[in-house]
Length: 216
Image 1 (tube, rainbow, N blue to C red):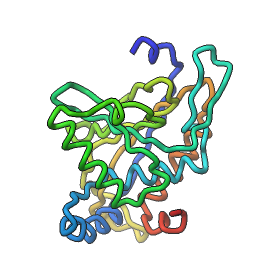
Image 2: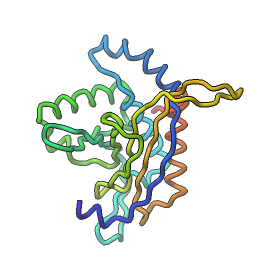
Image 3: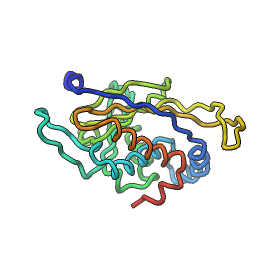
Image 4: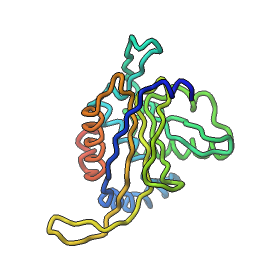
């Protein structure tokens, strides 16, 4: 935590409309359950982040203590902050850039089971390159997440709420809304980069069919 406090954080927040993703998850959830895997929204959030990192690799980098060298990481080891019996821990899903949404869900199921049992090990807890905090699973819509050194960015996901919004014809319709709060290291990441990454991540989630175009 002391190292994190030395990082000049800046924040960026936005609203994401998840109605199409909610419909897709509803369709896929029974299929995943038939294969023994619980499908939440989080695997989609993680995969969308990885696709975004391919376009903005500086967000998947690390900065040395002397602020002299930036190291770009080829692997997207995306951490998810978890409230466990051992306290707050951040296991990570390794090589997300190579995984399908289903495979990410499988790995999250495994990590969550280990976290519940208090059995998360060094392999699961080290090597992270980028982090998401699903604070909305407990409550709250906005947060000010703290970067985990040597990482340079983190996102906090608020709870998903059904709220009234206007559609293209001006009619009020129910919409699945989630707020996201990003923190980034201002020494190497500027506001425009964070904004463009967030916009791309948001586009993948609001129109999940677009993720198919960029899947490897």
